[in-house]
Length: 130
Image: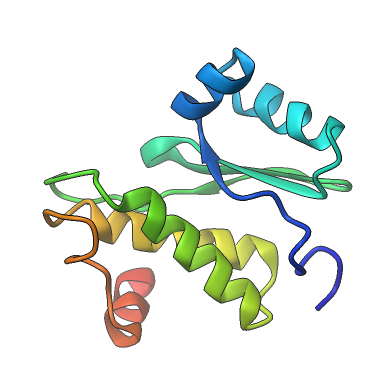
């Protein structure tokens, strides 16, 4: 994989965690903080809005997916991370990997528990095509 697709990414984080860790919940400031520490790419989850991505050459928001009803947020972050990591392992571009992470996180909040809502590949594809 290229450097932008390799294991040199920071792990996805969220605004609440970063408020504690570095004193801000602004995704641009969060990403700049970690980039300045040497991360090649930073992904900050911004709830239903999606995820904010910063690399050496780009900054962008990958929009989230709309869900009808949030049942439980437990496991959404893990689902997001799993989506990003598996997509990168498959060689997808970072933007598509984050989109997959957003989709899995959105699907996960529609069911109770850590992993009960995690989709099978065909379910994920159908959700992302809506």
